[in-house]
Length: 335
Image 1 (cartoon, rainbow, N blue to C red):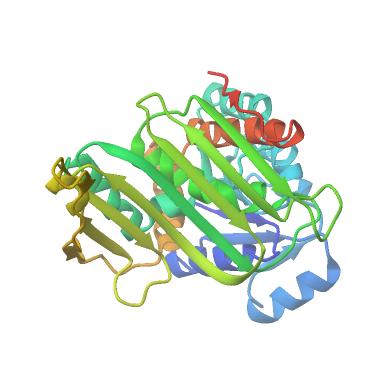
Image 2: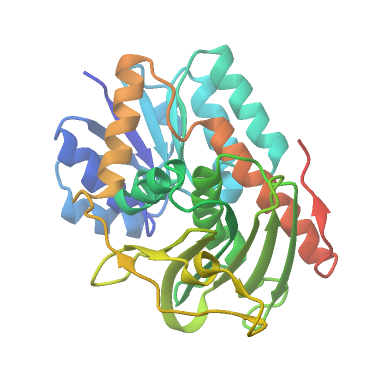
């Protein structure tokens, strides 16, 4: 049976602990946390787990098959590299690393050693996101014109990364998953209010080779908690609202384009579009993601969110960060 270890018990780590134990109480063997105080807190909830402070113990433990890495992004590369070099499979929370060069090195190491390298882009396992992908692939939207997303909250403020690196990986991974194409260029403007040099608010514009434009707005300094993405097509539109109580996915008929241009009135005829709310499967995306990691280890499968998936997202973020430095200049994303 597969045996796992987990490194990092900050905000997100306990959610992974809970889901790995839900899959099988014997699946998670070791939890590594360098903070004595934090270890003591988590140990009260999970007294049967073994807790350690130095992750090198995990590297030297031949009984561990895979490791989940849930630490600050700046440490993703170093720890994941050491995990792979020790011959263990790796699950890394988003983003995979902080540069595309680091991502490529991790991908190379995993491929050379025939190890699983999986990235925690949890929304690609979300039922609503998957349903939107099905609708897009069916052609029901017609030609996709543009997308725009908002992800805001009065939330946890980071000091090691800005709001873009902390929040936008979700929206970027969702959009790349939906569209099935890599973007050409990106521009980004950001504003720092709470900490000098750490953007609390970021606006991104991403252009795709098909002519589709995507706008992304993220902020951890907002009174409104919003988790919403809209896709506008020539036939229909999708509103994906993760917080909606009456349907996370709504398909709305594009009456404006359907009726066309009225030359006599010199304007488009605007009518209220029909709304369809599809049924969705009921499950926790993180649980499905954790199960997928274990399945990939046991069956030798390539993860849905593999290293290449993580690299694509980091390339956008890396380029957007350069655009922030240049005051919003549009920059081509390297292939």
